[in-house]
Every structure is written in structure tokens, then in C-alpha cells.
Length: 88
Image 1: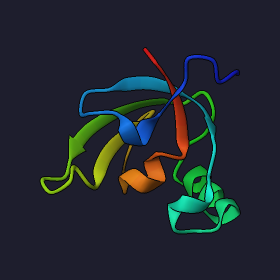
Image 2: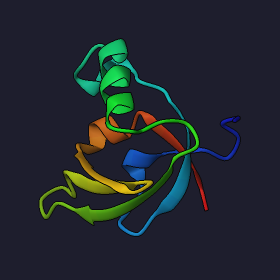
Image 3: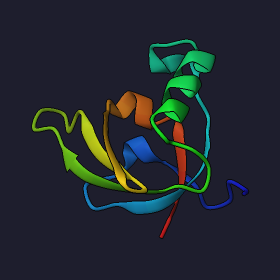
Image 4: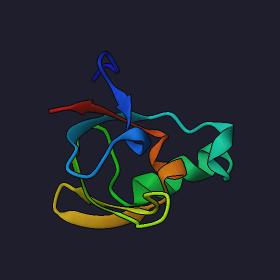
């Protein structure tokens, strides 16, 4: 799956829906890129999964609650910025 038309999930608002095209963990995530990628994959954040932003925190819109296929997970926006998604 290519990244054409993909956006960083961390920049999107509540109600956003899309399909994950990949993970692009960078040095600004607070964790080493390999560690962040491993943690995201363990949460089910994998290429091809459907994702929806369900909730945003009150202060700074952080953290966010995501539905990833049938699971619900919470992430900081900084971590979610490493997730590339194609809007649906």
C-alpha cells in the first residue's frame, strides 16, 4: 500500500476516519523510532487497518482515543503523528 494522499493521524480531529498506510516513526516521538514502531504494532496499528478518532482530551486535544478495526486504544498525538493514514 502506497502513501499517496496519506496524512499524519496526529494532526486530525475527532471523527476522522481512514485506513493506515504505514508507520513513519521519527526522532520527535520521545522514543527511539524502532521502539515506537514496535509498540504501535503491538496495539494493532498495522498497514491496512481502519482507524477512527473517537475522542480528544480536553487540554491540548491530547490524548486521543482511536478505534483500530474493532479495538479501542489511547495515544498521545505525538505518537499518532507517526501513523500515516489515507482518509476515507
